[in-house]
Image 1 (spheres, rainbow, N blue to C red):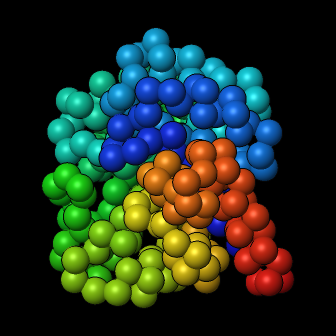
Image 2 (cartoon, rainbow, N blue to C red):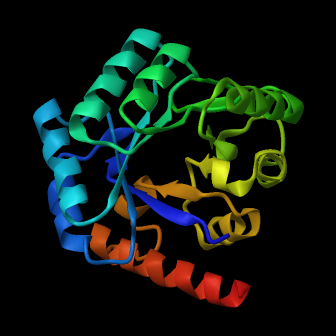
Length: 230
């Protein structure tokens, strides 16, 4: 399956203050999934940004980097108010999942032992795989894997194992996908999607270019790789 690009209007785990302008400048590009964090904008700003996504026919995604259930429940309530469709990240919580599912959102929590800022994934590959399976059995729609933050093994091999075990449609890969080689790896792995945020603001694909310039370059790179895959 062709992995979807999930464009995160975030940098350093915070939604950028001009997120609405960035989206407006690039909304016509062929990207379906657009995301934000639960920090960086006031709740009213988040609601307006998600409304922009939905008015343009896009799929809104919220990723939360939190390990406290109270914070996660607050984020889930905010996501429901805004009209988010995918609630991703955070440690698994039965209460959060029930709240998310009650309003029709998809739930993709982090799998494995995640902690810290910037986030790190620790443990063995078997630990991560067992946790991913556990979360699916508990009712999560899929898992959010910070593959390139894995401290104890090969990130690509780990992601392939998760796809083999859960199916690519049940996996989102997040964090540190910032090069042509890593985009190629996403096509090789075949997840539902992969997030891209900081690289677009740091000029990873068009040095000195704007967010729009870098996203357009990413779209072209992704399309060329997909064409080659076929």
